[in-house]
Length: 129
Image (cartoon, rainbow, N blue to C red; front, side, top):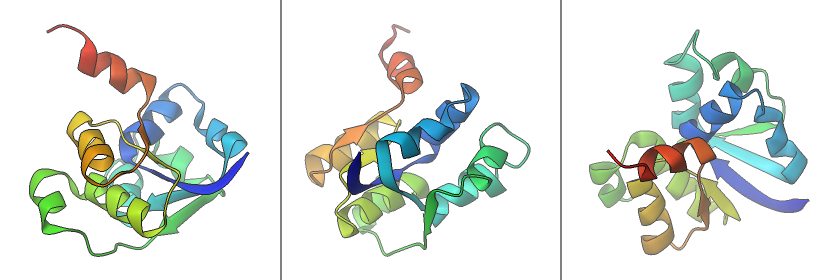
């Protein structure tokens, strides 16, 4: 099990909750960070939707208060993605779980973070339109 922190965005958390597998995260990682902006998106704004109750009940989540982000991030990405990248850099995360393709590219190519997304998001973004 990796002891380095990982930081999670809303999409992968919701995708894992949809398939009732959110609990796999702590089987692979000891330190799972969720920025406050992501928490609000899933738990507060998503109240009553899949993922809200599951994330709120997960005792292994470390909620991270909002931190300053590069203006570049907030101009092109959502608040959750921006916070995931900022927290990932600040906490030297081993991995950033992000579904949104642009955010994944920015995180890896501009900020040097290792990124992964959920299988659901990868399928949706790659299938022909």
